[in-house]
Length: 422
Image (tube, rainbow, N blue to C red; front, side, top):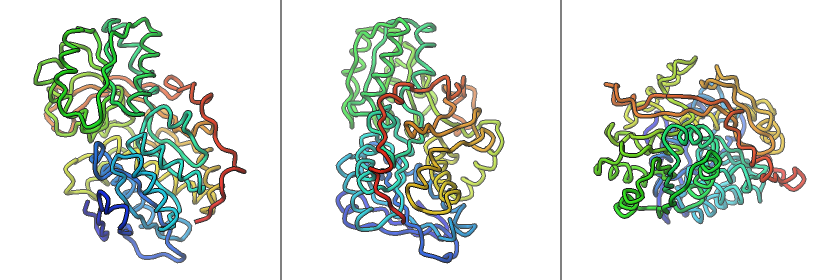
């Protein structure tokens, strides 16, 4: 990743746990000690591409603040260590960042297992942690924490938007394909509950180990079962391999495919034939909404050499999490964690500012951002290789709300959350 006036050296594998390079976004050093933020996104493993996009979003928001003097008169610096799409590594990275590097805040996640591991360490020390892009319902449910805020829609939000319509439109015989880890399990659980509630029958759930590159046995099983709908909770590089093989077997149009959520970096550059099915997302760069053109132009100016020529949903989530944190610190007038948490719990962002169709707000009971959820499919008429999708529907936060999270989430009290002022 190359950025003007910025030097970045990403360390991966075991070396990342021993060495990290501190980087500063552009701008002169402001009065006061710099504010150090730890970026906890993947640079290797299943979600490496999404991790890179996540960081680009964070850094664009940080540059915006540093260009106008930082936050509370302090320039923002960042440190990044690869979390490797591995929960154990995520835990070690968080421990190191807090105890050795003395970060003030931590931002970043794609894998829900990694996010959960980081958040447990963050809660122990009272360090505010923003889960930017992982979407297991458990992240704002049973695995919620007072210091953690979740910025993506979760699997149940996306399922609410897609599943009931698919049962009535395509049929009641379903097969589930599930990545065999926490996000896949909980996303498929939400899909199953909604589908069965609408009258569907789940013929089988096929478990897909992380790192799968040969889907032939799973696809043969689907052909034998001959369902009406296949609902896939498969992400990252696994999804790219899955889509390629489905397309090679001409199975993309034989069944109705629902991909509960599909991140832009997972499929960017794939041929249109591989973009079958309907999926959920939180944002698209072609929205005809206030601020979108300017946002796209800013991205292209800052990242002119990046393979992804336009911003996607992962970038968007990383940007807005980081920007909202800086704004919460400014509103609180301090970096003290309890004060910042209270500001984030009250967060509301008008639709016209956040470039969505509905106002967004933080649920103070679960710490998940409530926002518009969109359904999309391949844009078959596009002659622009970047304009890969078309939005077919959108649902308001109230329509897709995950009511179960309000019950399962038990936030720690402020008394049980250590105070911390970076």
